[in-house]
Length: 530
Image 1: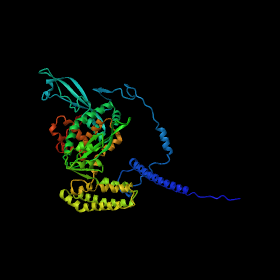
Image 2 (image 1 turned 120 degrees about the vertical axis):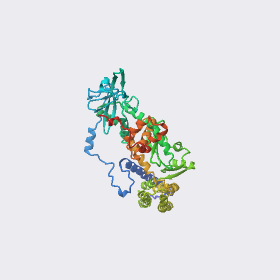
Image 3 (image 1 turned 135 degrees about the horizontal axis):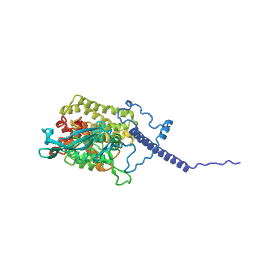
Image 4 (image 1 turned 45 degrees about the vertical axis):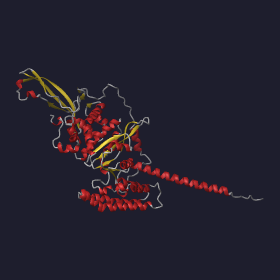
């Protein structure tokens, strides 16, 4: 037998080598994509379930397993117990269990368990007269809904109809004071409702449930209308506060998303709008709403008249706007720069720890400035002496690291280095301007009620509703910045706004109100009711 001879084909060997090379490249690309997707997933897990602290990793306790692989038997039993129950309501029929002895007065319905405080109004014509000089021939009753802390009260106004015996003239007391014309709501209820929703993030439907539990029957649409009418009264005050903010030497600006109104391009979806909070150097913040995040929004808000320093994060719309305005100096936030390295720590832990230590020296200098209450030229000189060399050290370190040939262009650490290099000039502004903060943390603390409220009331039905949210949140957030109780402020201002001269509307902003009226604010009739 003859053995078969095998011959090797050079072309097939070359083709195989090329295929292996292509497969290796594809594998490397897929591995890189998986790695990036895993990073995104980790970020989303941290945002949803983890702590949002930016402390160093070794200072943060372990979060534990976010997604357990197996569900316990008790969880399965609970799922069975929490099966959905279908509940139907018929229009025009009262719910079962509602008391039959329900008082119905001018659209305000309440039962016996609701406390009623009585206020007697007397006409000024009988002052100084004895009881035999007039005769009470009837008593009218008016009711207003009031609110105490964590409870509701109905104010009952007794309005006697008086007949003067000397002239047979019928007289009556003036009408009960009202913030909103022909409304059943007392100013205490209006203020409490606004504070509950926008300061404590209690949606109106939950407030409606609490009213029902207290024995008070109101339509939810009534609450919506009361909120709308009250906020419209406060709009001129926010306009005045906005004009004052624009006179600030330094303003901080940011944007945060909000779902508002129906989407014009995607059926069945809501439009992605934005609140643009602006923080002035007198500790005043104004929230304005816009349907866009474009640069034109900044131009419409600040225009070309603003002359000062604009402090922001690294969003390029701000730097693009500042580049077009010769009278604006653009400063940027060191916290956002630091955050870039925190997100890149998994790639280069040693290098990230090194730069975070250096950036920490800047914040140590700012802590010293606050502790010793340095300001003006003393503050500038201290920053020039102690912080300027630190910034030089950071930028030199960035330049050196970017020259390292082993860095991958799309790596998070490389992007963090490029972030600092591109913003070198804007990150140095605080060294020469003592009134410029090192970061925008003060603004982020002020805008926190928006994302916190968004977790509760989720969205705004209309863009007009979003504008109303911005109006009331501007006042409540500014009250907190000036240590003013928002409830006390709103009770006072809602009663003043209709009679206060329009040219002096600035006096009703929380900053000025604290000086003029905080010592003796106007109160609700609830305080004097028996």
